[in-house]
Image 1 (cartoon, one colour):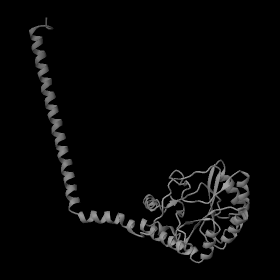
Image 2 (cartoon, helix red, strand yellow; image 1 turned 120 degrees about the horizontal axis):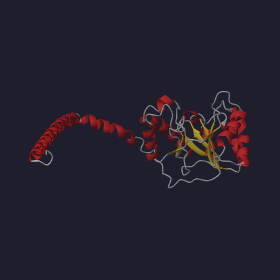
Image 3 (spheres, rainbow, N blue to C red; image 1 turned 180 degrees about the vertical axis):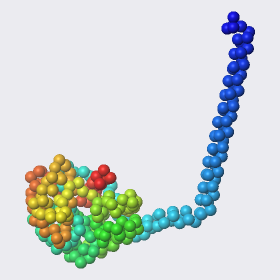
Image 4 (cartoon, rainbow, N blue to C red; image 1 turned 90 degrees about the vertical axis):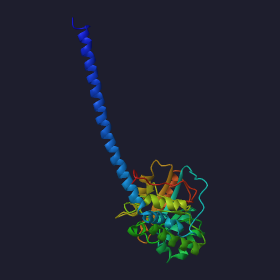
Length: 294
């Protein structure tokens, strides 16, 4: 009988020894391969380290360049809001791109309705309309920055470019009205095809300096082709539907006479819906775009 015999156990021992030897050989081959791989990785890391250490000045220059703009315009800082407030059933009327030939007309309508609004002005327009700039402040409206040139490919070329442009308008407003603006709006909104590469860095720097930016969650559509007073009112109603708190985008430029024409109807609509009107100050909770919105 083979099973259980001395010959069976001898064969079993031989098979176990062969399996053990095979296992050891396999483990040795695997360890050798891993060791060779690790040596290659270590060599690569050492090469990268040597290369990096061989150019220390280049790294220092890159670091210096990345924070150089933070040292510029040391006077261009404002106080952060301690906390943001969110007021229910509130609409913030905002006008971009002025001052213009339409601004006085807009101010007349607002004053007649006893409503305060927010004007995000362009510096080059304010330069030739300083009297209107002062009227905006004297009438109790909020004044914000919408850059100086409004030329996208220039202001969004880099954080340095944006700061330089912003500083021109900041200085102009302060020297003209004695008011330091604390709020601003990006041309095209905080996320657009021009600012996509640097927008996070620009936002971080402006926030570090205490400024608060405001996008919008409702639009009059008055910048579109073939806009009219009726289309502006229709767009306002449609884009405001279902919103408890609204930051409405409108434009203040010489060609937008239909915006002025639609303004009384816009105000009447919001009053009928039970909204209160407020100007934006830097303690108002912002509406900000993200890539889903864009």
